[in-house]
Image 1 (spheres, rainbow over the protein chains, first blue to last red):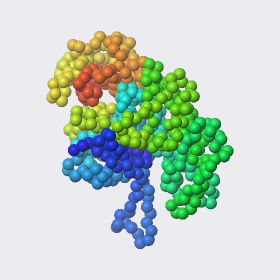
Image 2: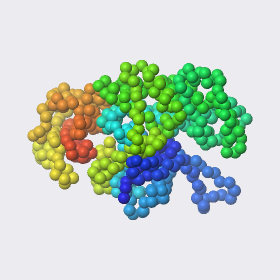
Image 3: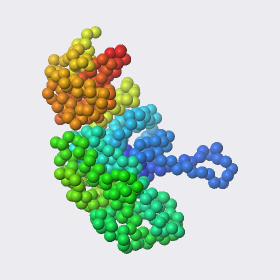
Image 4: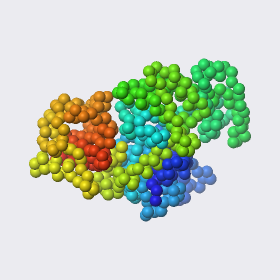
Length: 361
Length: 133
């Protein structure tokens, strides 16, 4: 039976059997609703549905919800049978606290009784997906942006940086902007998410953005509830916010400058190797025009070596950016599990949850 | 039990019953004085031990320059701040575990994996810590 690979993101959870040249079989949104038990419902006709996000800013926060979600994925989605659980590989975001990793291992071995476990950082996996072991990953996800230099499969934690901004903040920004230009329309956040995915794009460069701010062609969009809104320059604002964080109200440099600064803390023999092998990953990075704009800004940046993006290999599926960490995990699973480098049930029983720090990195 | 026995039987042991061993290992005091070492353990310099002790106190100290031992340079990878330093050199590497009074070193080459080296070195290190050493 093939190992399962699970990449739990802040918005979408990617899971599937470890088949590297395909997309993950399950890409499902993370958001869950807590349903009240039958017995505890009052006589009132409407019951409150509490929306639960098990993964916040990349890290698992709500363990009960995560357990239910994993239960669904493993037994219903992947077709595992109780009593015959296989091996599983998880992806971790950068700088996952030790306690979170240990709790995950504990959950997997004790509640799900799996036979083998491995965890690896998303930055390294995204590089494996494009066929490299050294390079720099810029992971722009829903809950966070991670910039991590990786040399020969080892993340340089000293130099890596995490920003607690991501797709979710861009959605809020878009909601505000749309609210300003369409004051009479009430838009739900989930609709704003969809609008963002459909319409948002990046201007060619700063000058083009300024021009667009002054005059832009507008489009009409019909919301699911029938209301019509106009979308004009808001779509470019969302893309621009990554290059000019002042739009989001943050005192920070644009993403390319941040990348260059991260790399400058690594020893200089490796600068060229890192910058010339830059990988963009994450859902938000697949925005229209983002890659071109990134490359343009890279040409203007203040470093001697220009960041250059890696092209994904041809045998990889389309949209690799959205789930490169999952694909890398599938590749790694094919190597780690057959060679018994993973954490086995015996290892866990002998050493306890801290065995994950020793065997998985 | 002499320190040399610790090295010979517990660090240079057979890993996972597959006939594999660490390439070299040693137990060294915090001041750099060797308590016991395997035959192949490289000759190290006091500055290198000082650098290692400093990295335990200030994690990240060795990362820019690399970890040096016996003139060999290892690239510092994720360890556990104040407890474990891990280094990589090609397909081999080194794990250093800090106990109350000593440093336990383990150097591995292919086909021994980093995970296996960690298990051996850290298991002995944890045991020594429990014994108050």
